[in-house]
Length: 294
Image (cartoon, rainbow, N blue to C red; front, side, top):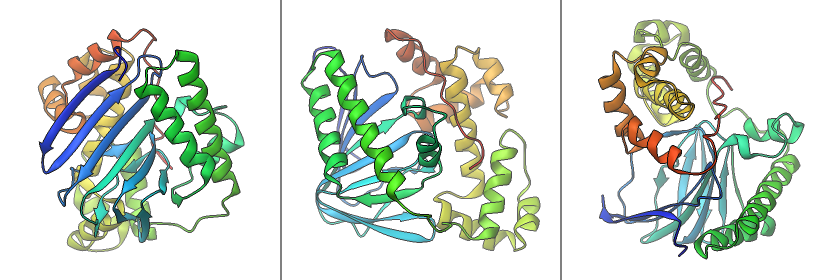
């Protein structure tokens, strides 16, 4: 493993074995490995493009009202701004490699292909270009290959993903209309205190029914989803160097300590440490374009 790679290893954490890796020459890219033995990590709203390669085992993964089968040798491609994968009926010793890529790194952010990717959704594929591209980029990072090789491998992988999604036809809505309206309202008003009664009225159903259906289709209950939206926006502002007190105000948290507590719960570290981690890397922090509506 390369000397300069920023790596932390956690063994037997929540019945999982994990490795988290960042390459100093691939800003905005995170690599994770995980072996599950039945215990799921807490769901998180991801602003990044997620690529999950199943190396062993297999599982069903939920996406809205759909279930997708992920077997060994296949890759799950999931667009930005989706709740992280929750495995169902996972086989013993299911092992995956996960690559998270900030949307800013997709080629031609204004291109038709990239806009399509940002709205794409989720797909399991065995396309050789995607699978081989992911493995090649992973190996380049792990072997501490020259920066230009790592960057070339990433560019090839992103081109393969965009080509894959461009070949896909129109995809059916994953959310019932009531849940879609509720989700859109939370994106528009993420920094406000939105009473559940208002959301239920918007959805045209009881509060209990809305919470159950929203959780089932989106992956989180409405209030937890709103907190994730706030933290996602806070990550953008922290990366941009905005003072934490201002970040708390802009994202709807009561104060800086409230922001810090929930930021740490979701991200795994307090915002000050997160900012220091970004500052320690040579390139300037990316301006993550979090789409507040989809």
